[in-house]
Length: 424
Image (cartoon, rainbow, N blue to C red; front, top):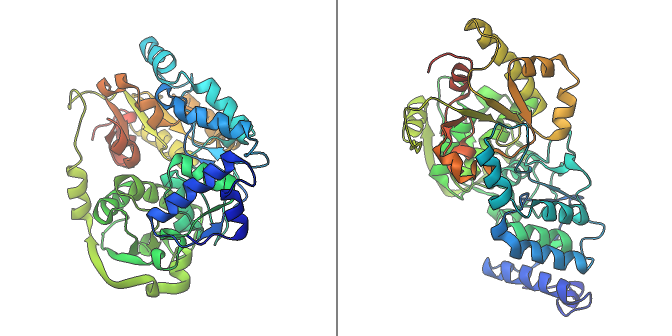
């Protein structure tokens, strides 16, 4: 690792022992991946993936205290993943007991640490920090130090920023130090596609399902997707960005994708075209039958596979304003078709607080509440980590939530049918 004189001085202790350990950690991290140098973090805001105060993670919170005591995060601002609890979300007394007395016992301590680390308000807690309403939106070419997989893949792919899939503590250290080791997705070579994905569907593929299929096939490699622009167009408008948000989250969780290129749509694909495809790239053809095959092979791990759904989560990653509006209209239409006034399955839509605030200025918010849907800032994944949830029949349209929990995946159309009293 070739350090600048300033970086070497930090490693040698010019700003104290704690900063020296941070730099040493970053150097060891870079050495692991054969990085030759550090590059500056250029984004104005950091983001931390850890948003929960689990008892088992006390050593992490102790390390936070060390960083804070050393005064290192001073002046640095962050956003963070969503909080794990919201009293509006349906739960039993026993659920709450496990949440508060066994699982998230360090939550108050952690949130105070986040305040001292630069979290300015509850508005800053969301996995979709890049949304306009939240404001942590990197520019094209920005170098980031993030870890949240759905945010990393969105920033790399849709915004054209540069970020590796870091760990929770590494991301924080990179933001505090102001530099990260250069390797992988920070390099031109590392951003080349080693897979060509040809989408040959007869109808617009479900974002979460297509992303799942690609993620499981390419794993941590970079796909160049052809044919999707037929359905999304060639402009990164709200509809396209919303689709790619959910698509990317599925590629990152069902595989380990940190970057994808969409022909004629995402920034680097528009600029460089097929020059982004590495020599010898493998080919994966996806049609409707392939998507059905992938979906049919998802395991159902409910205690009772034929159980009636008890809870539904929509919004992992968090929903956009457009999604809230579209889902509200769709739920209302389906309820009227089925001769009902309210959803028949307790349903939670999750979104960032600034998005919720803007949504609540509209009549749609009144309609959604009237339909019986709960609107929350919660992280569904953190809710589902409660061991009691494994005995619950929870459904979702999120392939990320399906992957990490016992929740069962259905397409958006199927979810609409189920929660409005129809049948799949």
